[in-house]
Length: 327
Image (cartoon, rainbow, N blue to C red; front, side, top):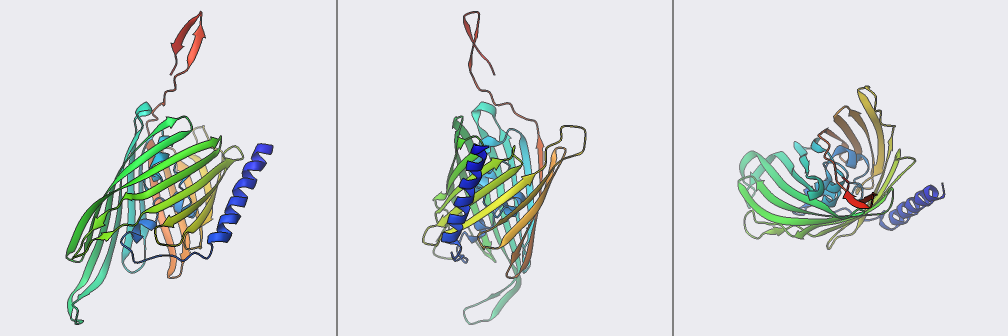
């Protein structure tokens, strides 16, 4: 009980302290990589995008590639988010555990926006109903260096097309996950350690380096999860986000509905988020909602999980004076 109270007090003070410091942080838009601040996965977005230290499902390559080591099943995740003004945003990811060899994943972020007019420098209309495409292919790998410590890395292949102009670039992210206590995790991620540079017409736009740190605590027999993140883009103000998840007991009977999750948080826009998750057999359905100055936003995701991969841990076993290895 004392340990539980300590964890709850620690996360509460962290949330209050960081929110007090960063609540007035300004948001940033209009940069080359602003669309990569939108998030991935409806579960994480329902929790305010505070996911760097949790990252325990197929959206991990986006938030913190080191989190892939927490996944013991093959997973396929697909997210769809309709935005405003003929704009849609989607994310797909496949995770392939390799047991003691680590975990691989391949993911894709895709943004499409239509309905633009192309004009020249004198204001003459050159074309209508033009589109913008932005796509990032993400290849990730992670492994445990210790029972409580994991490292991960991501290679990003970026492609952008704005009307008839297009360009591509390559980049890299790094992530770390550490569990100092059972039920408590600390995550760190550095996005764009190698900065993608994409040239559409003349000078290339560089994706800025982004530092992310997070804390996640699971309590009440894993029925309550609390998370808090700090995000700092180079040359911009930091922002803070936090979230919580309340989970029902997972049923091991033949019942089709295995678990129900309720989620809430506040995101980088300092607006409230909420959502719902349903685990139905091997399928998980997630929904996220948040308010925006232009209207309400809805995100939907489904995750398929199958084929649990055992993770071996070697330990000596004494039996009649002989040493064996058990997996």
